[in-house]
Image 1 (cartoon, rainbow, N blue to C red):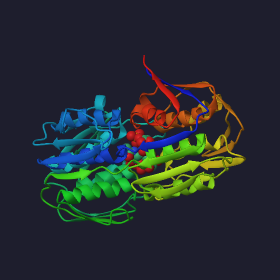
Image 2 (image 1 turned 45 degrees about the horizontal axis):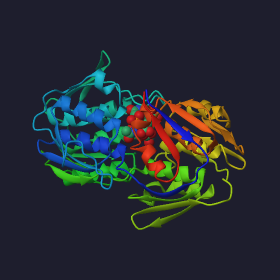
Image 3 (image 1 turned 135 degrees about the vertical axis):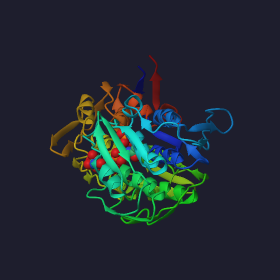
Image 4 (image 1 turned 30 degrees about the horizontal axis):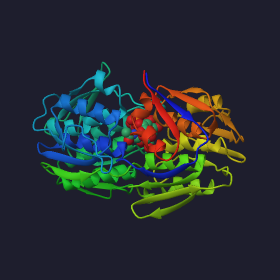
Length: 429
Ligand SMILES: CC(=O)N[C@H]1[C@@H](OP(=O)(O)OP(=O)(O)OC[C@H]2O[C@@H](n3ccc(=O)[nH]c3=O)[C@H](O)[C@@H]2O)O[C@H](CO)[C@@H](O)[C@@H]1O
Ligand SMILES: C=C(OP(=O)(O)O)C(=O)O
C-alpha cells in the first residue's frame, strides 16, 4: 500500500492549480442517468471516487468517453468526460460497488425518477458517523415512492412515476437535497423543498439540471422550487472549483509559511473558512483567476471554529484547521456539529506532538512550538490531508500510511505541493 513521506520545514512558494470539485462532480455524473442524451462535464478531477462512480454508472448502462485520449488528463483544464445513458440496463446498485462510496447511493433519485424503480445498497463512505439515509427515504416518500429496506438494500418504487409535493427537511442534508433535485426534476407537477442544503455544489447541480431542461429556482437558498418536466436533454457543464481543496492548500500555506497563488478557484466558495484563516494570521486576497495566500513571518493565531452547513465553516476543513491550530500561539477550540465521529485525526496528530483533548464534540487544542515527524495513519479522506499539513511543519520525517483515503479526494497532491517547494513524495508498495 502506498505511503506519503514528508520532510517538514520548507515554506511553500508558487502556484497550485485547483481541480474541479469532487463533491460537485459526483452528483453531476449521477445526473447523467436522468437523460438518454449525452451529458458532457468539463473540469472533472482525476480521483479514485470519480473512477469508482464511472464503474457504478457503467453497471446501470452509462457509457463514457474522455475527450482526446481516453482518460487523458490536461493539468491546465481538467478532463472533459461525456456520459450517455441511452438505456438503463439495471436499476440495482449492488453492495460491492456502493459500499465503497457514500455518494453512489444517490443514484436512487434518478433511477426512481426515470425508471420508476430502484434497488440500491445502503451506502459506505468515510467512517465519520452513522450517516443514516432516513432523510432520503422520507423525501422520496413525499414524492409518492414506496420504500422498504430489504437485506441491506433500499427498495423503492413509484408506479406511474413520482409526483411533486412540498417537503420540509427536518435537518440539512447535502446528499438528500441533491437526490430530491434530481428526482423532482422528472416528477409530475411542482415540488418545494424547505430547509434545503445551500452548498455551492447544490447550485452547481441545479445549474446543470437547468441546462438539461429542468425548471429549478432558489438553489443556494433554503427553499428550492422545482417544476417537473417530462424529459431532460443533454448539456455541457463545467464542474465548479473544489472549495475543500482550495481551503486545504490555503491552510497548508498558513501552516508552512510562504506565498502561494491558488489558481482557478474563488474566495466566495469558502468565505467563512478564509476569514478564520485571516484571524490565524494569513493574508488572503483575490487575484485574477484565483486567490493569493501568504504568511511571511509572525506566528499562528489561536482561533475557535465550529463547523456548520454552508455558508458556515465546512466540516470537510475541520481536520486541516485543527492541524494548523496544533502550532498556534495559545489555546483554540474546534467544535464539530455535523458528524458525531469526525475526530479520528486527533490521536494521529498527537503522534507528532500535538496537545489535543476531547470533550464530546469539542476539541481543545493547546498550541505547541514544535511538532516532530513520526509514522502516522490516515483514517479518512480529510483526516489524511490534515496529517500531511502537520507534516509540512514538523521537524524531520512524517510518513502517512493508508493514503488510499487521500486519493479519493486530492488529485496529484505530492506534485502540487512539491512544485511549491515542499518535500513530499509517494512511496509505492
Ligand atoms: C460526496 C459529498 O458531497 N459528501 C459531502 C456531503 O456528505 P453527505 O451528503 O453524506 O452529508 P449530509 O449533509 O447528508 O450529512 C449531514 C448530517 O446529516 C445526517 N443525515 C444525512 C442524511 C440522512 O438521511 N440522515 C441524516 O441524519 C448525517 O449523518 C450528518 O450528520 O456533505 C457533508 C456535509 O457537508 C460533507 O462532509 C461531505 O463531504
Ligand atoms: C466525507 C467526504 O466524502 P464522503 O461523503 O464521500 O464520505 C468528504 O468529501 O470529505
